[in-house]
Image 1 (cartoon, one colour):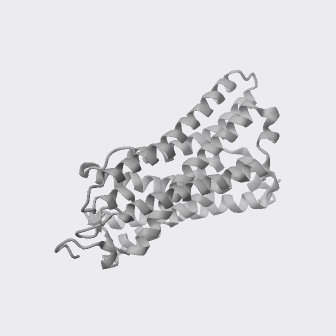
Image 2 (spheres, rainbow, N blue to C red; image 1 turned 120 degrees about the vertical axis):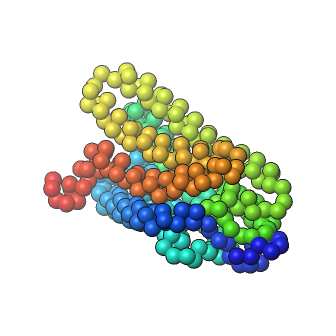
Image 3 (cartoon, rainbow, N blue to C red; image 1 turned 135 degrees about the vertical axis):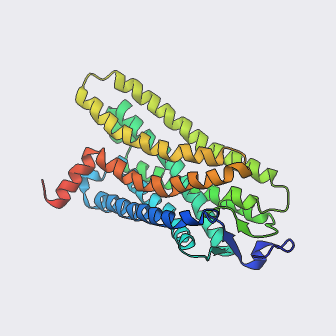
Length: 311
């Protein structure tokens, strides 16, 4: 570690990811827990991707988006968790400057993409419940693929702009990132110049890609609840709550932690708390998504039975 004077981290060629070094006895436990959840994420999401591809009954708009969500979760966790596991296992906690840039870019891009994709999925549920007679017209497969592509493009475009703003500022002094992966608020703390403009940009983009999607999702589900209350069929009610309930659980697990991290000004007091919140939505949430959709969804259970030859 070199903190004798102000040195731009790019010239040193690496950062030190402090992570959970303040709790050395916790690192072994965290390693085991994170590894278990990461393996659950890989197995669960690969299972959904393969199942959606093999079973023709799942070639519907809802499962086009679910397949995208599963692939997204695979990429999202892989952008930070392997590095975290390496850092938890041994004393070496460095990441190259280029590696940090790449990690920041993909974490931002994939996180933003998930925000937009969850809005698209809520729109799909809105049309299915509130406009059932027009569903096949409004949610044409070509339009669904276009919505999915738009989600990915918006995420990667936003990240390109935002990550470049972060790495333009001089990151001076010691190059210890007080986090377990390269993320914007932690990197801004290393700057030797005023970062209020960057913090404002972060707040605005977070509002656009976190608050607005959340408002749109809640609006969709408000309309869905009204439509459900008018239903007379008990079977219809159960089916709606089955599919929509799963999506609402995923939305809650993703948006609530994201709001806690990105919609509050950075402060030293909240940094340690922020690490554990970030650990939840980067490790736990992606592993729970396949379980939520599989256990609460008759279509997926039916596809599993057909794949196993039980039907």
